[in-house]
Length: 402
Image (cartoon, rainbow, N blue to C red; front, side, top):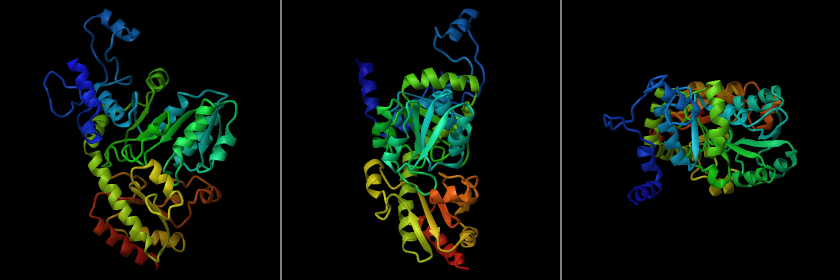
């Protein structure tokens, strides 16, 4: 009974407590900080034990491409935060996206995806999957009727981001997941822009959630990593074997860095979101800015949906400077605190020109369809003083006028 009571108490922990303690495995030395098991292989007490491990008759580690104690701690902690039955860490966020789709799909299957995707995600859906006989249909993710209309008898997965990269469109997760369930398809959500603290896709009906842990989970631009979370049946029976045999495993050292990042995630995300909301309001008052995209603002066309499914407006802001690409480049080149980078989710504030970086492979027509223009800029708001960030944006907007 005591063990059950402890389990029940742990289940009732708030996220801030889970992210410090959940999943911890201590060695015989009783370390306070999680150990880094920086090893590739494991030894066995006997040949019989090795045989039992490989047959699955005995629990234990076999090879770090399959599983590793430090990586397991990261996976368990993410499960506690997300409310998932199981998870697997991956070498990067894109490895997580690719594995979540390829481990589930086969030749002859069909995927429905929102068209507003990070460039590499769109490449997987639009270019890579068809090479293996998996067809795809891209839809306006905001249009529920479009999701319904795109379903075919062989549709096996729905895939989308919400909010989207870079102009922060939203997909109604609950409604789209309901459509997927009616046709027997899995709903796979890339939740990186909202962060696991800002949105809970599984509670809204999603089956699988993926993250680039490189972003807010690490939070300081140090390591690559990703994670896929979902039902144990999917993770253990489909995803595990795919990762085991194809090899996009998460480094134990990177998993340890992610564990350290998770400890401070609530503090950092709260600051990111608070500053992002302030920056969005600041930009919304500037005559040099043609448009601001931020789900937390009342002028966002899906503000009501944001209030329904997100805990805050999020840590990302997008804007259009008035005029053209030259003005956008003058703005970017004048920034001092914001750094030009295609990354996001860092302690440092970052600015990106999507049309020439993250979405450059798309045609101008495809970018325009997604609301990405030559004057579009994406901001990842960091942990600096918000007043200093406003001052930096102020002088850069002045420079943008030429």
